[in-house]
Image (cartoon, rainbow, N blue to C red; front, side):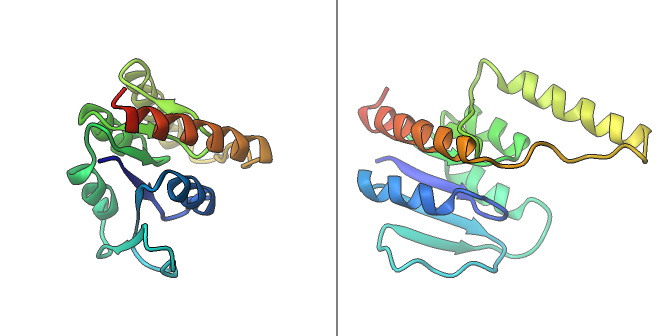
Length: 151
């Protein structure tokens, strides 16, 4: 049975994910440290984990596996979920797979090193756009369909 896990802290596509999960009759877990209101949707379960480094990530990584879909922007969490056989999407709809997760981890480490070497380096990426939201909806639809077929 396919399940949808959302790394919900700072996730900009929770509502969109809920709509797609409901359409596919898939249980969705919103995992966070707090600050979210429970949904009235019986397919959506709000999971509140204690504060602490990576507690949300560990909860998802311990449960996600083959046939599940995970939505996260956290690259180390994505790597664990991909290794467990789950399908992983970023908020902009980009799929993280066995073929690209190593490169994503290397890029993340490189950027961390660059920021540490230059404390004046301004971070921040592109803003989240309507096109990102649309790509996410299409990608989640595709991944849930494929996961439910067992593909």
